[in-house]
Length: 213
Image (tube, rainbow, N blue to C red; front, side, top):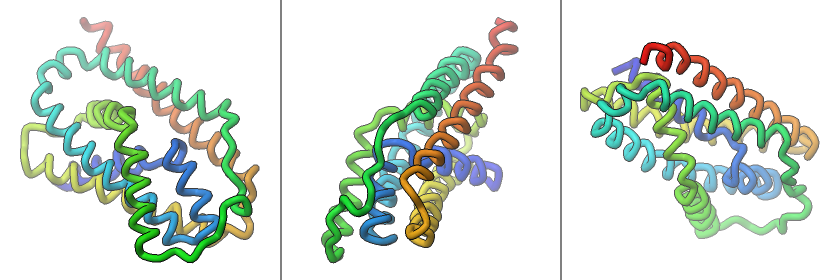
């Protein structure tokens, strides 16, 4: 169960890397309105990750035979998709708004709930999250035959995602007076390079499996 929990933590941390639409909403909001405002958005996304991880684990439990028989192709396809995502981040010209351009408002609890709902909707309407989780669970060889281990993997994913957003918003809010837009773009490219390397590792791992077919 401990191994399952650790694998879930890894999945949760990776899927919560703030390089997509959710990050583009969370980062400026944290810079402009403080940690709680950004954390509300991030935890909304984490709730979506919790839902998608349950769907991914149950899906794998039903199609585990198919996945095992075609594991090489799954790793290759997933690795290529992840690599393309990393390349897009490396060459991305998407702009993160400067915090001065975001209207500062007193954040009431209603605003935090609204931010969480926005984060959930942005994340849950991105089917790439589910595809990414299916690939990651396959890449990490998660156990989908033992209910207790599956529960640990699911809990780990949820915990990893929520912890990541807590740390991300804490770092940004702590150093927001020193963070520049240029530095955020550099961080995006570093994340893109890391994602590209993970995708390439998956593609390389698939080659021996494809040769044995």
